[in-house]
Picture 1: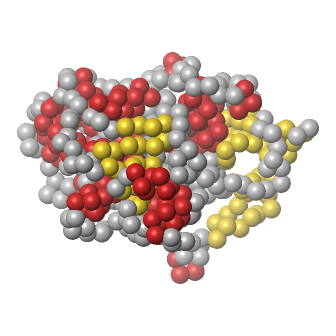
Picture 2: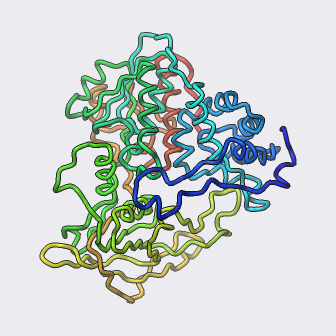
Picture 3: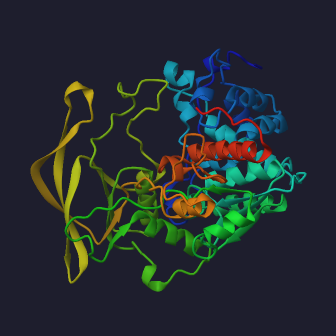
Length: 480
């Protein structure tokens, strides 16, 4: 390490967000950047721990101490080279990852000032693009072809890794442009779509073929896919949102969160959206049901529409502030998170269950909620929810359901592919991303259920390795 004692004298410094009054009127990225000098100073805070818990916590296995030291020394190219060996797209994780690494940093434990790993990661990859360190690679082809179905983070990583190994990769995407969740789920104020376009253009230069607007099972059959390719990787995500089937659910104005987020992103990219599908929060009372990141993204979008009022409710209790003894270091802390969207204006409430939607002339006007309490289960099991009978009415002109996604059922396209291969009626996916149907693999949220971008990327890496083992006749990689 260049300065093994820097952490004793230098405090954590974040780039922070653009001022609220400035960012609330646009969808540009809210996060700012530090100067290269400040960024190197922040990298010097890495302690070079004997046991790097940041590496342990990262699903991708990033070697943070190594590239932090290179960044501190001004070795930007070398830092990128080390970073890119484990993380295919640091420009994505450097923007939207919740930084599991930072939560396990020893400086998080000792002084609650972890190294700014995520921001440093973003700075390294942006410098690599800016300085021309990232150039198209032309792999030597091995004559075998792989189809990747889905172009979200898992599919893109699998495609990138297989392409670099010499396979001819074709990515099938049912939507208008590649990117999956990155493009149509995450708001532009967190991830500008020019960042995705830049990477997709590079992947195309390296030989990956993207076929957009193609729905496998509809526009091309599973049989055709099996016949035309030596292996198929399913990265189809977990797209079915969790519903709330209570009275009044069919009222106009009650939407899934992605109805708002995906359509907003399409409009910003100039993709036509039918008038009847457009949602405007301007001047309306907005209620968001669900306290996670997707709900927060709805808050930020509603604020940019200049909603009259934004309220977010959550059925679970309010998390502790700062420290939660139930999730001690180096675990990811379950504590109160205040996002940039919350800072822009939002009423947040917890321990509220939704009883019914109330409307007039078929349009939602209010929501009846009821306070709940959580009773600890005997033996330390899952707490039991108990309704208290204390009800109230929250007025709302628009309601967005942001309660997560259901785990994808292993049927549909998976079953169709299995039948095309060997006539099986059922199909399973093991922890190595291999399915019980020969030639068919799966990764990302299609395997795990809805999760983090960084975990989907790690899953894509595993799937690519398994496909390479299968097609090259190598021994399968060990399961974790």
